[in-house]
Length: 213
Ligand code: DC
Image (cartoon, rainbow, N blue to C red):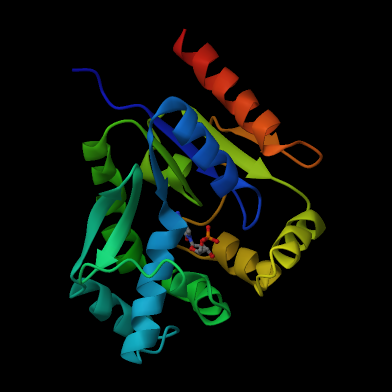
């Protein structure tokens, strides 16, 4: 059997990763993996347990003992905690403020890498995040880095009514020591300002198709 195909989509917050990754996954019948949701689920769990999310050692210990497992729910892969996926809770202001601290802990990154690589058990993937092309699946030929100006991205979040300090989060995500956000070697940069998601995702699928021909 041939190796599963992985389309890696990285980029800063509100750059359009999720919207495009979902369109592409549905169009190609690939499984969709939102790795940011996995970090958010750990941040939510830490907040619920009263663990200080800026204490790297405490977060590593919490992650070490975390009984979270991968689940495929109608083509979306996520981490469930005691059989529960906190879909709404992981988008709150509190979780958004805590998540980039949790994501900077190197034990957490290693733990996530093992789970994220094992998602190929579900078949071909569209996986979005910050380090998918640079660290999780560096071997995939299908790497994309989505971008748009900071003001455009903040305006998208504001329009969604989501309170999220993107600038602070992006700064932490790009400057951390452990697999920071960066353009992966060989990635195609996709600036989607002024494009509809349908146009952007069609452009990405054309590039994937051309690389596979
Ligand atoms: O994509 P998002 O905004 O839901 O991601 C939440 C946070 O998780 C983001 O601030 C950075 C972190 N993250 C990461 O460090 N690596 C990933 N592959 C995905 C997300």
